[in-house]
Amino acid sequence: EYKGMSKEHMMDIRRQYCNPMTMKVTYYKKPVFLHQGYMQWLWDVDGKRYLDMFAGVATVSVGHCHPKVTAATEQQLKKLWHTTNIYVYPPLHEYCEKLASYLPDPLKVIYLTNSGSEANDLAMLMARLHTGNFDIITFRGSYHGGSPQALGLTSDGAYKYPIANGLGCTNTMCPDVFRGLWGGSHCRDSPVQTIRECSCAQDHCMANEQYIKQLKETFATSVPTRIAAFFGEPIQGVGGAVQYPKNYLKEAYKLVRERGGICISDEVQTGFGRTGSHFWGFQGHDVIPDMVTMAKGIGNGFPMGAVVTTPEIAASFAKGIHFNTFGGNPMACAVASSVLDTIKEDGMQQNSLHVGTYLMTELAKLRDIYEIIGDVRGKGLQIGVEMVTDKVNRDPLPPEAMSAIFEDIKDMGVLIGKGGLFGQTFRIKPPMCITMEDADFFLAVFNKSIYNYMEKR
Ligand code: PMP
Image (tube, rainbow, N blue to C red):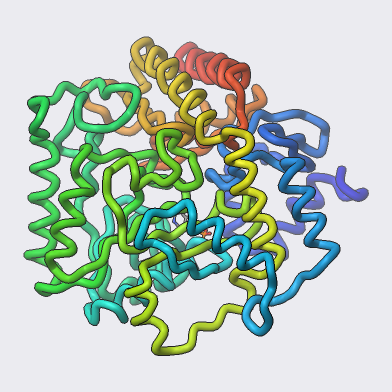
């Protein structure tokens, strides 16, 4: 019960008064009624505790109600809530200077928004204005937002509508080295290898060459000679922690720039230390984008997003007026500023690397035991476990089977996510404060859930 309201009553209200879509995305057959959170833990209204291995899709970056973030939020809460643009508020300046210090030159000009979709909308607009070109390329299987503009970038049919969205957006083949046509054990930058053999030589990746050929074909078939932008996540999030051959982004950036386009890294899920080895996902690909978009983890659950770009691109955009009532409001800036401090003070990037590498190494051992675990991949705490009917054909494990395992994991007290074009990939992206003990608990539960499924099958 919550304030005298039963669970049945809450579901009735949901059915009657809430966006019908919310009935689809309660995720579980028996939904979780959340009441409270602390760090990596969540409690439901009955007092049952869950280990949160999903963090609301990599959103709760440093931990639920992290004491440092809560204290900073409380302080600002009692001082000033306001809009962004009309006056000069100290928290915005403190935050922008701090955030800029985490980005390499020339990425120093910051636009604060309220969500990832808004950040990507703005990035599209700026790219088009700056280049004078219109066409934008993204990866198949990507998710970059649900607003009418960002839906054009998003290339997962489940989120599309039969209306004219995405004018000028074209997708290219995702260079997925597990499910895609080419690739294998040496192609990607992950602590574990794929089960798929590959014929790449040490210094020459055949898969990369093939996927780059596909990108060139996309240029040739679908866009004029000059383009506005290329959007890519360093590791696909909703797509299921999909990773590309090591040099793909580097070569793709070069080809895009040759065609007048700018390169945009969507760090909504991969930013803020989550990939462990680096603060930003793009750094793992040895590239410097012309624009970076971010959200989710930036505010540890507080609604916020950002676009960071170069002074040159910002100057092209400054010809008009851009107004955003709440983007960068004092509350959001105070929260986000303490999130940056907490990541640093609590060593969360290092923790992501340490616990994430351990998780992937142990998950790979389970992969080698169970026929239905096809792939384990990712970096740091951005992990995907792709489920298959068998390792030879690698057909996606059907939705009923995925749901049964997913529900069982939840019933044993762990929350994870699902993703991938066919809903075939479990997604593990916990708050970055999780410990090795938590990792062991998760691994035991995951192992048991797969065992239970195999027994019943
Ligand atoms: N980009 C990526 C990579 C995302 O994962 C998401 C959200 N899942 C978005 C953009 C959109 O963010 P928001 O939901 O805050 O609009």
